[in-house]
Structure formats: structure tokens, C-alpha cells
Length: 131
Image 1 (cartoon, rainbow, N blue to C red):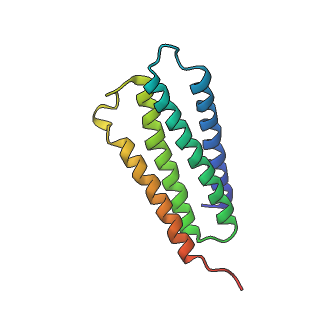
Image 2: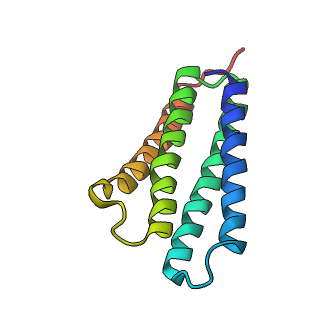
């Protein structure tokens, strides 16, 4: 994955996360339970943090970080954002138990994000500076 592609995904995620954070602040139903609003806000926070992580990845990829590991980290961050934040957005809007048999997707999203961070650790350990 090229640095420009990683940057574009970071921008797209940042755009969506910012829009959803604004929706959380201004457009959620007034009678929505506070716990569901908090859950939606947590999803938006994680989504935005992942967007910023992907932004940093684009800089690292352009600076010569191991390309396979930065690409893997980027894809894992993307999958983690979809699974973790996406499931929290859905649950907060649809109510407790709405994920049904897919209730496992939220923790899998967290594991995907942890795998992305592990990929960054591996990239850092394998990065060779040019002499």
C-alpha cells in the first residue's frame, strides 16, 4: 500500500469520525439514554484516534518504514475501526442486544487494533536507516 493510499484512508476515516462526532453532539435524539450517547461518543473517539494513527502511518511509509508492516498496520487499523467503532455506533443507535449473534465483533475489532499496534512495533524493530 502506497503512502498516498494510506493518507487517503486516514483522511476518509477522519472525515467520517468528525462527522459522526458532530452528530453525537448535535443530532442524537434527546430521549436517547446517556449510556448509549456515551457509547456513540466512545466509538467516535476511537475512530478519530485510529484516523490519526493512520495519518502517522502515511508519514512513516513515506519515510522508509518497512512497507509490508506499515501496510499491514494500516489494514488492521481500518478493519479495527470498522469492527470496533462500527459495532459501537450500531449498538448505541439500535439498543442493547442489537448485535445479536454478532456481539463478538466489538472485541474482535479491539484485537485487530492491538494487532495493528503490534505491526508497528515490528516495523520499528525492523526499520533500517539508510547510511
